[in-house]
Length: 255
Image (cartoon, rainbow, N blue to C red; front, side, top):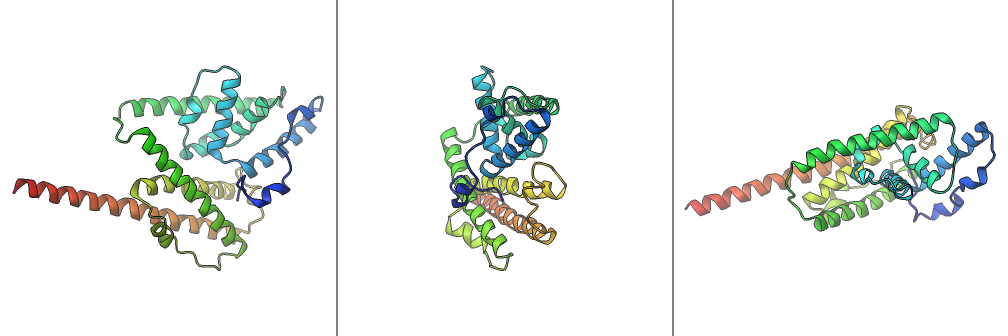
């Protein structure tokens, strides 16, 4: 489980690696330092923040593209986290990387642009149903709930999932609406995708979850599945109720 920047455990991780300290290193040693930096970034930054790193890299290099802002959690498997880590290192001054990492970086930047371009075409064909400021508040509400869920997950792992957690009551207590539930489901799916990719052997996540046994990993995946199911229940139930209300209103008008 990635530590949040606000976590008390963060103070034990040390300062952000400075790539300027690696000047003159041989490729083998340089790659070792780079991968150590990757592990540091993984502990502190999520996928969205990795895309922010790419956007910062674009800005510094005067690349006129907002594509990283169009990347969503569902793109995690296609885009990965490394592109953000490398962008951050480049922004902070690294001027040389092993060739395969440079190639990876370029390939992933192309993938970001490709996904963003496809998404732009789709979005341009849809009318805006909700004002951007409202959407922002909804996303922020879902993100705050994600932080709470991450704390619960940490507690569950520490307690080996022996402590009961009623996610339905959690949603009710926080008065989660259908729009928030839709975004929260995506947030939870992003968290779940990390452990799923780790089980598949993805290098971005395999080491990060190596401290969990296979049984614990399966329990964690199941835990995420139950939460996404509860979110889906809110989404579908409230959608059905909305349709019924509209139908009743139409019938009343006809009378």
